[in-house]
Picture (cartoon, rainbow, N blue to C red):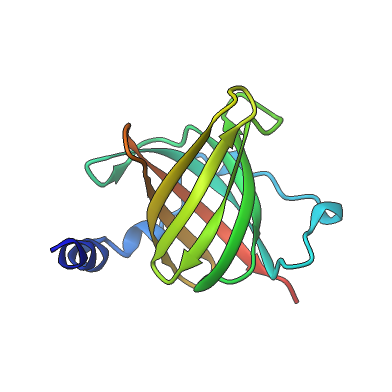
Length: 148
């Protein structure tokens, strides 16, 4: 039953969201080239926010980081609220096709939150829907670039 509902959710999820740039695109920050991990094959930069009933609300902050592969691989990044210039948290995890498992650490609080996510991507952008055990669902929308 769980796999059937996940499959329906993935196929029913509108592809237009991954192709649609959020209005708050001025929030993007680029990652510093001196911080590139050895395992990284590309970087990403975009926004995060709350997702209510499958509809992403206005972006609440920025996110950027690195990934090894958009299909099966790992990622690490940093994020903050709109009004912050320095990262207030870190996100990392594994991408397994359309599924993601990961953790979020906050620099303000001494805690770690585990999450699962569903993902979609095209040639230049991705959209993740993050879910934890409690609380709202969140989204991350980013443009990504593969290193040459």
